[in-house]
Length: 91
Image (cartoon, rainbow, N blue to C red; front, side, top):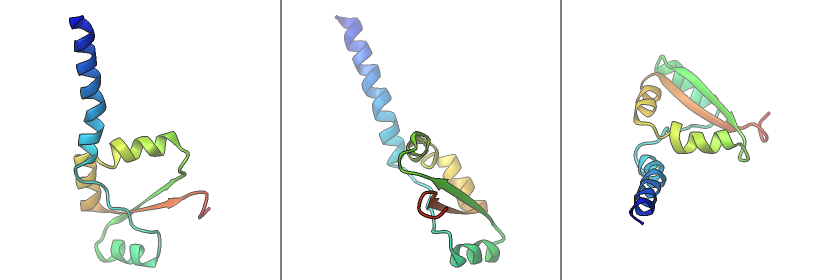
């Protein structure tokens, strides 16, 4: 009985961890347009272009884990203009 409770507690903690992580800072994506390019040029930063599609499991996982990681958020904010487009709408 105690073993099942322990497993349930660990499972709840594991499921809650991404939600808590997602509640923090997130990468602020811009649209890929002339204004984004201008911001990159004016700030001497690179453009990070992310192309994804809504049905991609990797894209959903990146939304939950990658684009909410505080170290990644800080690094991208410092040296990049992050832009994101749907690959199926803007090929």
